[in-house]
Image 1: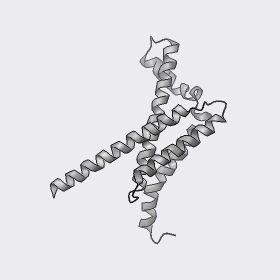
Image 2: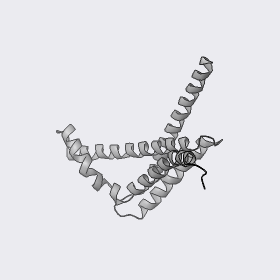
Image 3: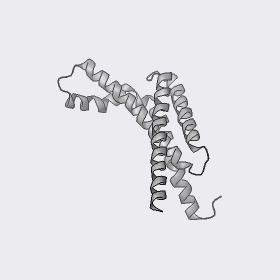
Image 4: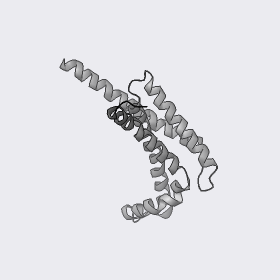
Length: 152
């Protein structure tokens, strides 16, 4: 399939992180990523940093952290998708489609799991995280191009 080791290495460095991250997201969409499971780590940290907060407040903070995690994990997915397809003409659109597809699959899977809740709003949040990362990736790329043009 690949003629030499450098092509294989190039393929692995481009696609393996994207595949790994997608698998991680889908794995966290199982009961392993439920609020009950994440509270084992997050709740003690919140209690440490906010010792006078009520249990209800800690639950709200935990919810915000989980929503931010949605945003961040799909931002990483979008970045990895942009990075994986540098020669593709519409790579930003393709990256956003990957984000939307993985987010939709994740939420559909969660709808079959009693420990999880499925929400269209989470898909929108995920796509928002992906869009933010794609815009940042594009802006950084444009700045690099301008820097190269100025240096020439």
